[in-house]
Image (cartoon, rainbow, N blue to C red):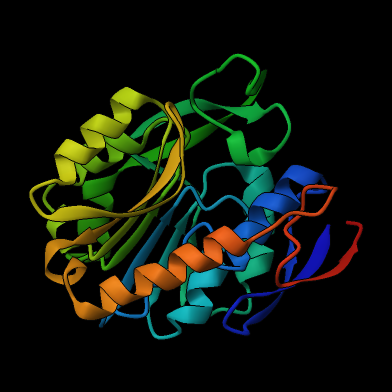
Length: 263
């Protein structure tokens, strides 16, 4: 499915996603800047990691907002990665990697999502995943970073369906370099452990969606979170998030052109 979207700051994107309502809604929310809002007060963004890139909505969104940054998109699933390749082909600053990141090099089954590739996971979860799977590769995150010459991560988006904590723990030496961390949690235990891991260097800045055992959170490094611009931007961020509405079919009404076509 293809659809057109325009973000709140006027960036227009023609995007392809899986041919279902869930994928269109999730990708639309990302592309309008609601899920992973761009933080204009964060300077000098050179390296960005999109871990769990799926079909590339976050990579495209960040490529438009950080055109000079080196963006690494990691996606082990072949179906979603094929769409990711097509969506990012026009962005020379995006490198697609055909594997996931984890604590160690592994070959594991990736279980398909019940409704969309967004929930594909190395864990077979009731009502979220089906038995159908493909064997995919995971790379030890620190080993990959050393091979790639990555010694800093300015922005990181981390959504790997239950493996977020393992990735962050393995990346502990580079966590202090991260200026902005967008991370999903899938359990209250993981949320508390993620909080504790980043607490020495980061503050919870904003949560666009936060429930008992699921949420999207944004952490900002201590040296940036108290900037006057960071505080003033929170008001705008809250207003944009609160104003977002949905149409009856579940797709965001604000900023979408409403045009879409089949696959």
